[in-house]
Amino acid sequence: MLLQELERRVGDKVLEPSNAALLKKLICNADNDDEALSIAALGTTYKKTGFHFDKRLEQPTNDIRYLKKNNQLSFQTEERGLTHKLIIGDNYEALQNLQVEYRGQVDVIYIDPPYGKDSMGEFAQTNYENAITRDNLLSMLYPRLMLAKQLMADDGVIFCSIDDKNQAYVKCLFDEVFGERNFVGTFLWKRTDTSPSLSNKIRKKLEFVLCYTKTYSSERKFVQGLVDGGDAPLLNAGNPLGILRFPKGSVQFNIPDGVYSAEDAKSIELLDNVIVKGGVNVSEFSAKGHFKWGQQNLDKEVNAGTYFLVKGTTFSIRYQKSSKQTKTPSNIIDSEIGVSTNEEAAKCLLLLGFGHTFDYAKPISLIEYLVKMSCWMKPDALVLDFFAGSGTTGHAVLALNEADKGSRRFILCQSNEVTETTPNGIAYDVTSKRLKRIMTGECYDGKKDFKWVESNLPYGDNLDVYEIGRVFHAETTEGKTPFDVIDETLYGREKFKTLREKVEWVCSNFENCQKCVQNDDEWESDKRVRDDATRS
Picture (cartoon, rainbow, N blue to C red):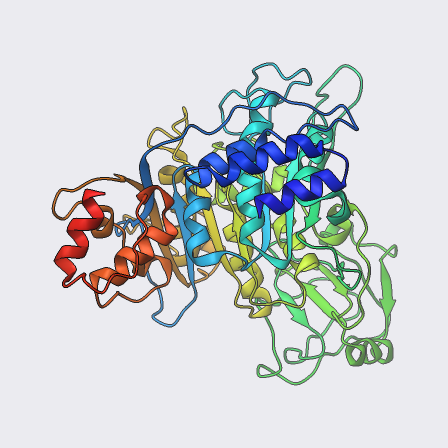
């Protein structure tokens, strides 16, 4: 794949043919994937645009990084439920390990990297409380994007949140990795309604979301539709609950939150002369509603497959056309399509009992919208976030599945960085705990002392939590060799029947093992296989 990338750069006149030839030679003689990626990074200078950054390459190592399960943090709520994954550790190493099982299978990637806040690239505070220069940001992203691209399905899509100070630079990097032809667009998300002035020139209320596909297709369709933001239940008017009466002279009713299907009841009734207005309090209700429907018009919309979003015991309703009536999405993402702001994300974390641990957390509804827009025909999509932070992407996937009975799965990767508000590390103190609370309705200690559970039912499903283990590639101690400690069942494989099969699998998937098993009929026993492999 790296050699193909070099050819593409030559064709795009980004890389000189002579330089490409040298890089190819170096890549072909690299000892492992880490070295190959580092060498390929040397060919990312954009001569035609002047884009350049000083590359800080990943440090080579003789250790093998592998997944080991954390049984204390993993849990199961239902034997046949979906199983999601959280990997704690360096996301570069996590992405390497994911190649073993998920190469070419990921449908949607969303990332919110820890970008610097200053425009000149000097050290500055970032989302995750660490300092990063712009060169370091781009150097850090490059090999991770290359690995992420290998994980994506051919029709996969990747989204990246970025601020306006770094957007131009990061977009150039994405152009390099994914190709300008595969650039879908830049979405503008209204991230705040109440932000103070962040500069002495303008108030900044928008943030960018870059979008790229892995491969170009003129047939690829993105579809816009309202989302419920993880808060409001979805009512499909074509499969409605009971008789929902909107009485004359009153705008208050009592409809319990929930997902209503044809199995629950028979019809909807909207009485004449009732104005339906989306998202208002009773005290704000007036004749300036979004639409006014009588029963005849309602029946027409029901037959057309219109969806209704209903929340709570006070009047709050808006409508959405069914997926059969597709609409090309706008590049504006805001409350008009059901996507909320940073303030709502902060409220959600407070309800889950995490206080002000993340100043720049994204709302559930943003991720919901991006996943639905790009994968509206795949209710079983595989979603990856390798800068998971508080775990918003996992929360969004679970909320989507609850809303439309989908079977999407998520994989989250998060380093366990220690901050002032997370003394045990972000992954331990927030990410894993958030998933535990929303999936089971309780904390790891069994407590239910967070407000979210008072008005929400747990989502269920199962979570496997992994950490990154390290083993020296030439370790020979009995029971501690790479062939002993690497568990193939954590990579979607059944237990190997013979050690020889295990050795061949490890050597072909973990390059630092530096051992290629040859076809040798004279290997008489598994013990001899072990001895030969570990001595080399």
